[in-house]
Length: 245
Image (cartoon, rainbow, N blue to C red; front, side, top):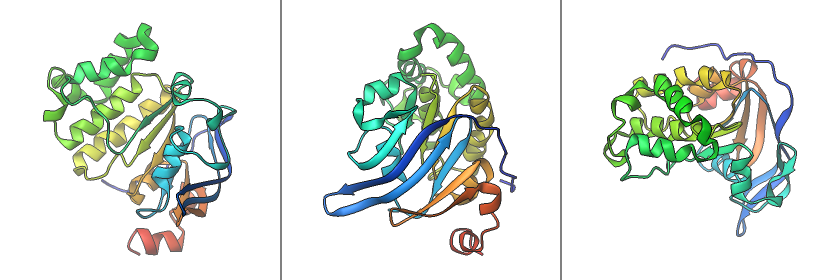
C-alpha cells in the first residue's frame, strides 16, 4: 500500500473523554493516568507495542473493565451504566477475536448485528455489501469457513449493522494480507461519511498514521506521545522505533 496523507476532518463535540484513567489486573497496572479525548467525526488511533495498553483502553471504553479516574461516553461515565446501555447508546466494539457466530451464514451474522436498528436492516445490508462486495458474494457461507480477512470484514460489517456512533476497532489489520488491508482502508471514509466516529487500536503504525486524524502512542500503559497524525509522521522517535528509521 502506498503512503498516504492522513486526512484532516472537522470535529465538533467530544464523544469520549478519559481523565487520569488507570486500570489494573491484580497488582499489574495496565493503564496509568491516561488523558485522552475523541471528538465526533474523527478517527483516533492508539499505537504502541504489545502490552502497551491499547486493548485495555478499548475494553475499558466499552465497559468491560473496572477503573479509577474517569472515562465518559457522550457525557456519561462508563462505569455508571451497563454494557448493553452503552451499545444502545451507539458504542459498538469489534474485538481482535471478532466474536462471530461461527455456524451462522454471513447474512445471518449481519442481520444479528442489526438488532438495535431493525427499521434500517435492509439499508444497512446494502451499505455493508457495497463496502465489502466479497461478503455479498458469500452471503450464504458459514462464517467459520471464511478466511481470516473475510471474517474481519464480516466483523466490521456486523458492527456497522448496529448503526454505531462510536465504532471501536481492535487490531483490524492484524495478520491480514495487503489486499484485505486495502479493502478495509477503502471502507473507512464511507463509514465516517455516515457520521461514525472511530477508535482504532492498531499495531500497524503505518496504517494508523495514514488514516487517523490524531494519534496516541501508548507505552507501558501511559501516553508517551500524542498529536495530529501529520505531525506524528515526522516524529523521530516514532520513525526510528516503529517505522524502522
